[in-house]
Length: 362
Image (cartoon, rainbow, N blue to C red; front, side, top):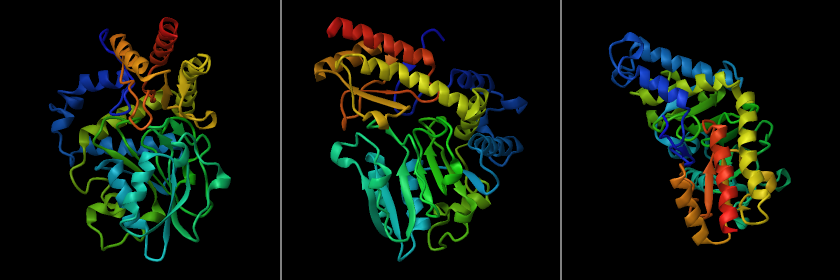
């Protein structure tokens, strides 16, 4: 394992080493079945047990009960952008979107194909450096739902206090920060997340949905696009991404072993603090993109004095075993994605590199 790097990529992203080792040990012969989980039928008892345990583990970590289902579907968060309005944006109603970055913009764009939408708040004018304040949010009359993106990988911002809108169903894309710290999941009618950032490998999308939202899905849309289809069939209506669900379940077990959301939240705060403190104490050599009150625990975005230095930083960091630090073109500069599975040692290594890089180039 000595040649492994610290992977700061935004996704597909780092996985817990313990999970990879466990999957490696079981890869050829899963629980004495004589075959890999990649070869195992999704109708077998072995896979059905994985599927059921993954749902139970997710509910346990989130502290939610039998009034929710956890579904494992395909198509990524991008498919959810369309499924949500297809299922819940009925004629005469309005879907409200709070824009905090590129992914919320894409979600809104898809919703416009199916009905009336309303931008309840946006921070686009400042290149999405912050999350809007609650007093900036203006809902439409009688909205069908309110949609937020809880964490913004490109801009490095996060809802540090998640909103609530009473009886209005709240829907969140939590692809890049799900299970990163404690929060009240029961404030949400629906949460969705592509797994490849903070839950596991690519290929599976998690949907946590309150059961009352399953009652009146339109019968005029394809079966695969109705949430009730996947709920009634325990996510087994069609062949699921079995290996991805298996890996996700191993990650959920690992999270429980880390002390659940309380334990991982404490560790994430420590990790992010190592990097943000380095930025703040650099005298302006490093400049964070996100405003102080909107900083993400998962994606740290920052700039250097010029682009040439940024290119040198990324190149030398990779040579030092710190990979995936180049920022998104929308922001430029550098981005360190420090998801749940990133060890503290990775953030300490980045901090040490940043200090030495400034000493040589400041």
